[in-house]
Length: 177
Image (cartoon, rainbow, N blue to C red; front, side, top):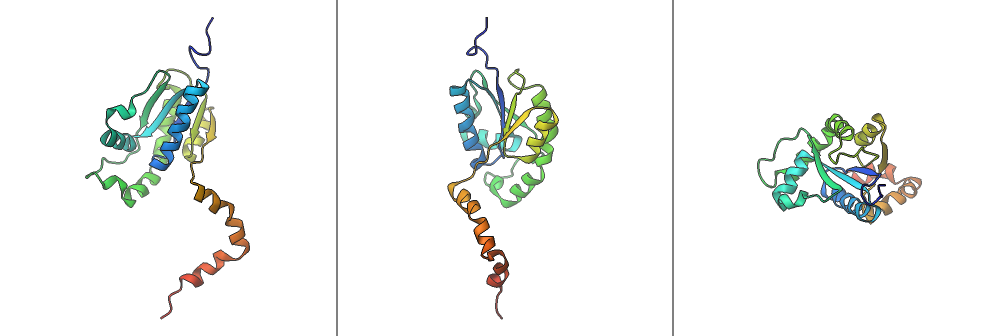
């Protein structure tokens, strides 16, 4: 008779937007679910993000544990020319343009998961990733990683619209000659 502690019935695949403010909170949640919830986890990085992690933190940064593994998918971005090149605005534009390139690779990963267990859930904040999960019939959960400032700003958007703020922006930006 197998017990739940031997092999978790749930296998979550985490694939946050590949920048630090999204990866860090998703990694914390993934670790928490793995330890407390006995959830098997595959944490997916884009290739460029994986290269960055290995360069800045060394091979131990992607060392997994039993039931917790890392995988990467091609993003089509070239390796950076210099150490600071991957923080430039052009890289962010390229990354945004490459989001759809993740989809076929992620679908393969969901079919044959890195951990060997079938994927039961995808956790992401990337729309093409959430759509890919739906395409292959895997449940998807959106994990929104925003700051407290971002939450407060979004809560007040309707008030600003009601006060006519968006229509006043062109007047405020106008430069008099």
